[in-house]
Length: 224
Image (tube, rainbow, N blue to C red; front, side, top):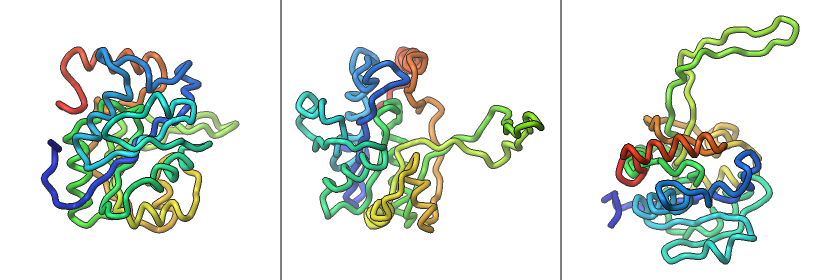
């Protein structure tokens, strides 16, 4: 049973094709709450949307094959991997969410907020959190210069798009750090919804330790 009741068909492209160089290995296979990071992220995506295309390294395709999702080989860059996954999303999808498996703590409620914004007519939606730290910009010989954090936000995933918008975005074949950036570059307005403080991205071993600590106190993606 899904966490949504809308009539629109919604799919997720779940990106897990990174090498995990900074983590020291494939972080999607690291343990979170007794399971793998990927298992946690996949369960939430499957519960929150109508289908999932899981994008993984070619070497992992056989071991990652599982009931309930399509497994697709990733590309050389994140953008290439999203395009590969997008190509496997059925043509009847109305909305497509793109989520990084390295953010396994994203909740079903966050997915729902993104989908609700798309149902209101937004073409591109990004969950964001306000910047709380002081910001500095390096300016060569001048040294550090303070930058106002007013209106500054940190972007998260899942990012949601109308299917036609996301296909147009990737038809431009831009190589960007996230799909919202590519949307902006081709002139598509990007809106926002509230993100989640616990929706951290696992990049290093210390990030995984924080995620496991959150899990232990009951902050668990699908249940949050």
